Image (cartoon, rainbow, N blue to C red):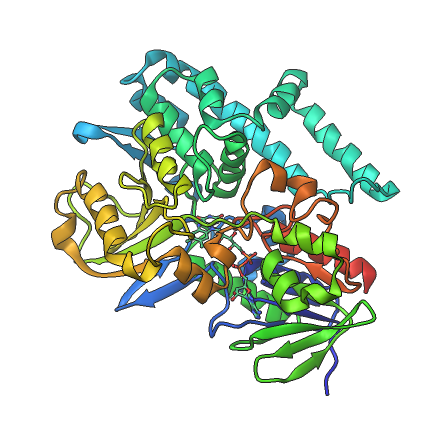
Length: 502
Ligand SMILES: Cc1cc2nc3c(=O)[nH]c(=O)nc-3n(C[C@H](O)[C@H](O)[C@H](O)COP(=O)(O)OP(=O)(O)OC[C@H]3O[C@@H](n4cnc5c(N)ncnc54)[C@H](O)[C@@H]3O)c2cc1C
């Protein structure tokens, strides 16, 4: 039987990035994916004849694209001139159009506040510096506090230098704003409610927090980095990014098996020894990387018996709490006034967003939801918040019609022809995200992006450097430092740690 240097659980983009890096370094790698298609959530899937992207954007880190030579494997970035606008849909058919060109954006902002229009370029400069710092942080292995090795100390010193290079004033400001609420942060910059709310929506995107929750400025910077700005910038269709990653990993020598669900990780004397598949097949390897979320990895695939009670308690405490549903609408054509390849947001006021979040706190679906809508030629994809995984009353299967109607009605206020254009729809509730995509509690990012779950505390304090209490078992998915989102940083960083050790 063939032996492998490393087995990777999951062919999401992070698993594929790890596989490609390790295979390129000459390791024998096997990727095992439970679904019949690779990509995890970075997929373009068909529903009733329509093609829909599961995610809105997919910006892999530039060094990953370069190092893995993804252009050779079919990755075709869109030209910079095609960066879409971010349009906030407001009451009374008004709109705020935030184009990527700062001069054009300022023109639209001026209608709401000339003072804010004048500040917009400075705000963009600050966000660029903040995202640069975060990018460096995501490229740095976090130490296993309280123990810091010499090499980890050196990387941290480099990170501190990057922060210092942002300039003394910016350095302090970046550190100061990270724990702030999105509302407090944006109130320091702007006066117009419409602008503050549109930008603040990116701070709550994908997390079960409100714009008045601490740390939503951090999530704003995180999402800004992953999107490449306010609007979602595509590297191409989601499935094309995955195709390029699969082609690269296979060309470098990695093997991949689809419909191969791992049910447990074999452990002998606290050392990873391989995996067991659903059909009972056992595959041996001294090194296993898991891109399944940390809760699933430790509590289901490893099992609590192999771990200390304290570690199990920490794992059980990881906050997953998904509250996003996704609705794809297949249309005859886009309704009048709606453009393809554009990001629309329904986030008209800060109080509107906070009230939408209030519902989630009580286990209810937001009656007036925050929506982010991305469009292609004949498909509209609606990101719906908040749709809490744990409903106070009833089960998700009984709430499908309610949620779909809320989403369509909310958007139809701005595009009255929408209803009559719909041919087919496909709804993914948080429960569907869990069953179909193995996202525990439907959490998009394999763990909430929150202050007590970031940097050296992601996924668990002291275990952010991809290693685990089991020798030879590593984490490489979004639940570990540098995730979530489509950047591939967790997969890249994990591969760097593993290739030094095998
Ligand atoms: C609806 C939605 C919209 C999103 N939008 C965006 C966006 O616009 N921009 C952005 O940056 N991020 C977005 N995200 C978040 C982003 O998709 C994730 O953070 C990221 O894709 C996670 O990548 P990953 O490779 O770490 O994990 P995943 O993509 O979750 O891949 C993990 C893989 O492991 C497999 N797996 C799990 N358990 C097993 C097992 N036991 N055996 C074998 N295989 C297993 C799964 O099937 C899956 O294929 C979105 C997520 C969702 C759900």
